[in-house]
Length: 392
Image (tube, rainbow, N blue to C red; front, side):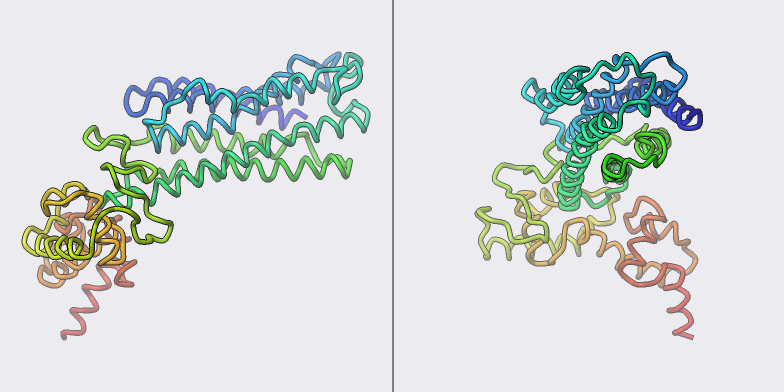
């Protein structure tokens, strides 16, 4: 099977180069980078071992040592989980107690030893996987499916963490382009796809006993695609947290003591100690601040910045915006920016759309266009032309 072997080798080689590249990054979350390097390294090792297995047709015997090393694949899911956790909750560092996530590796190795409960025979007389008896091949395939089940479970947990993180940053930041971790969400979906296709594909192979191509073919194809994707998108992830706010921004964790977490749909805060009268007072101060100081025109303005201007706690201000405006801080600020941009588009006809975007507090024209079309239903250029035409 030279084609699959070559593909796996190319992925493993690219992964090895990516490991060195990630480890050379001298900024950002170094602990997360080291875990990412381990994740890519194990993925690359799996591809290399599968390439050797594909080439075992030409070997004299089935290599038991190589086969046993494939059990390191159980580390892929936990490493992905720890990487996402370190990026979204960086103060939750790895500890010795986290080692239990890797227990399936020695357990699988012991269970799959030749002569053991799964492989009750000597493998020295077989030179490749397809040469094994049907019953043994079925056992091997079924014993390998928990790897993909594990990856699927950990990927789902990662998506849950990223969803929570995204809700959190919308409550604290007015610009999310450099911290939204969209590339990481795509990486996790990649892993979930690998797990799903591989799990059901191997189950079908085990029970149908049909030759549907090389073993773990789905895993190889998607894994190689994942490695190349990381090489293009995930290598230079941006700095997520500044030193002033630190990890409290991530994953819905309170930025100040006593701040509860919002529910998925922005339900009312519980036990915050903020009464209706105090909330109304904060709301009036916020409206006055927005009209007089226009803080939304400052690119990258944060919840904590406006809270200082209003003279209240950040979590109280967040609760007030959610309750009175019915939207997150992110949506609240960008709504004001769009309204100001609409005024500029009509009052300053010689000003370019890019200039309008910057004057309104957006970091780029692309971000501005997205917010504007979402709220107005037209691009800034279409809006300006329509209004001018209507006046004529």
